[in-house]
Length: 319
Image 1 (tube, rainbow, N blue to C red):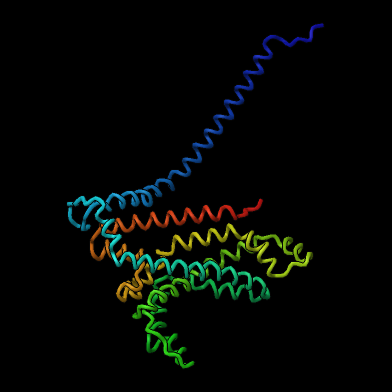
Image 2 (cartoon, one colour; image 1 turned 30 degrees about the vertical axis):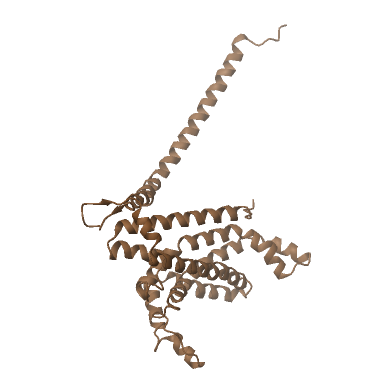
C-alpha cells in the first residue's frame, strides 16, 4: 500500500498558506491605514499651527518687515548679527537662564519632597493639603498677577507689611532692578507649583508598596528608601516634569512680565518670550523678532536634546 500523498495536496496546502499570508498582510495594511487616518487630523493641525509657523518664522528672519507694508526687504544674516550684539537680547537670555534654574529648583525638586511628605500624613488630612497646594493652578494667570500686584505694593502690600512687623524694610518688588525678575519668578512658581505636585503624587502612588515593605524588612531607613527606590522609580515622572517646566518656562513667564513689569525697569525683568513679543508687536520689527524666535528655538531644542540624552541613560521605566 502506497503512503505517498496525492500529487495535488502539496500544492493545495502551499496555496492555502499563501492565501492566509495575503489575508494577514491585507489586515495589517488596513490597520495601518486606519491608524494613519485617525492620526491625520492631529497631524494636519500640528503641521499648520506648529511646523508651518516655525518655517515661516525662519524665512521671515532674513527680511526687514514692519508687519503692515506689502514690501519685504531681504537683509540676509543682518538680523542675527544685530541680535548677537544686542544688550536687550543678552540680558533677556541671562534673566531666562536665572528663571530656568529657579523654576527647576522650586517647581521640580520642591514638589517632589512635598509630595513625599503629604503622603506620610494622616489620610483625612491628605486631601486637604492636596487641595491647598493645587488650588493656585486652577486660577488664571491674569487673576494671579492681579493678586500679586496688590501683594507686591511697596506701602500697602501684604509682603512688605509683614516684613515691617519684624523690623525689616521690604524692597520695591516690581520697580527694583534687583528684585523685579525674582518677583516674576515668585508669581510663576506659585501658579505652576501645584501641577507638578499632583504629577509627582500620581507617580508616587504608582510605586508598588511591596518594594518599600521588603526594604524595611531588610532594615532600610527612610533616606535609603527615598534614594534607592523612590528616586529611581520616579525617574520617568521627573523627566516629564523637568522637560515641561523647561520648555514652558518662557511661556509661563510671559503673562507675569506683561502685567507686572513690562520687562522693566531698564530690561531687568525681561525674558526671551516677552522680548520677541516686544520686537514683533510693539516695535514692529517682525524680521528681527523672527530671528530672535528662531535662535531661541534652536537653543531650547539643543538643551532639550541634551537633557534627553543625559536622562535616558538613568531612567528605569519598569515592566
